[in-house]
Image: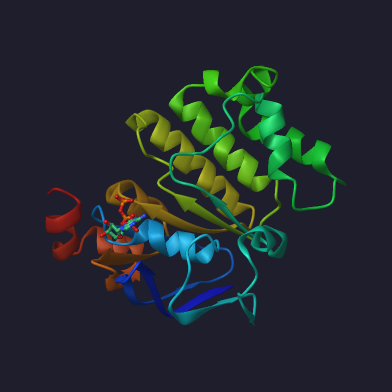
Length: 232
Ligand code: ATP
């Protein structure tokens, strides 16, 4: 579904992605793990069109991905950004509606009902300002809002950031449910243990490059990963 070939990107004159290759097949969860500053967020920003690419290419559903950022959601590629970036003054429901801006309004109501079924707490708080939600609830809202665009591939940046282990588990269980329903997910995470436990395949990034890739369950027991990223 998504192929990244030799992707390079710079901030000013400094290149921070040095030719990243990765692949996400339909219906799988692929995770990109790595330390702070490895380039994970930059990679996602390139895919969602917020960050300029200086080399390589991205193929999405068989065609080179060249649309501007706002057009990518309409193509089926939607990002739920790091730090959630929900609209704190708007209600939960208004945030969800905004997630559907790039598509036709048909089916918005039923999709919203589906979001509420997945995250009942959001329905309970649907008329309240989103800024009053807890961190975990805001993360649920960010994911639900991304789903309102009806993506075929969901890009997630650090959904576990700042969450207690129990909430992280709840969010990751939701991602599992989404995969079971056929969603394709590219998940960037610093919580390598949780991400490798969930994903089908994984890439490890270090200083702007992929250094290891493979089946997630194999990487969980790989001594190089255990020592550097799992703290064991
Ligand atoms: P984190 O988990 O901390 O977000 P990351 O793996 O996502 O880390 P990036 O945020 O993509 O890494 O950063 C990759 C490199 O680019 C780092 O060296 C970082 O310092 C640098 N960088 C990130 N954003 C900018 C920016 N706006 N301007 C200049 N350099 C940046």
